[in-house]
Length: 263
Image 1: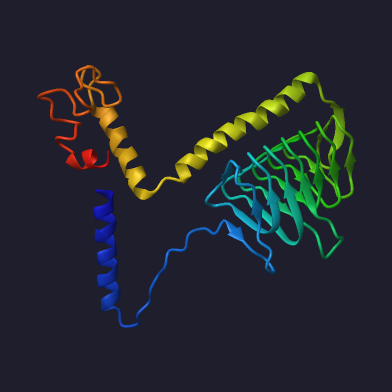
Image 2: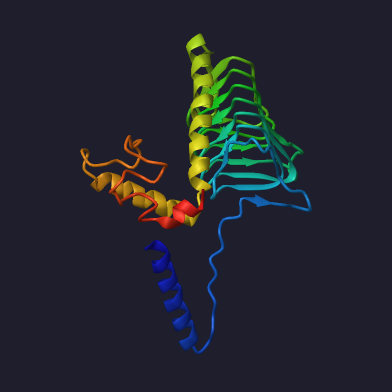
């Protein structure tokens, strides 16, 4: 049904274009996730968990394994280098950038780092196992030590050096306290939870049109099929040679002979 609707809409569009006096062709351009700058393209580990379709990774950027860049996020290495370690997540609409004109600062983000939505990491160094809250900013030349927490909305001003194992908050950000064992566990669990979630998003975003249509049909079938009725997901104890139960013609190769040709 979805494919026939798409074909019909395309036909109508072509008919309308044919009747136009000044012809104009509108093209749908999908988001370009990876963009080279001056011949330098991003380097993404094959084991990277997820780069969202609406994310942009630009220029001299290296992303490690099991890391993720979420929806609407931008990672720009156009003039200097951005490196992101393993199992690190760049949250929705977050901006990671470098400095070249005012100062010469690359951006380095370590492993097991979680950066919340709408954050900014600009020309700064974030070491391993750090949690940066939503809307926080880490600015030019700042260094955030390992096992640290930057709370939501905090602004780490240019050149600030945060020692290992501290929690900072406020604008401008100041040291509030040392992190606890519970904080460290939270940092680790956050990174692992987001990695697992990223894998599920990657699987969904990788589906083609036919797979999505089949999923929609299967979901509708599941919602409408009575619980005491035959369930396609169940193993049919009466099945004979993978042809279904004798006399039962639904959900078998008798009703879908093309499925039998695939074996």
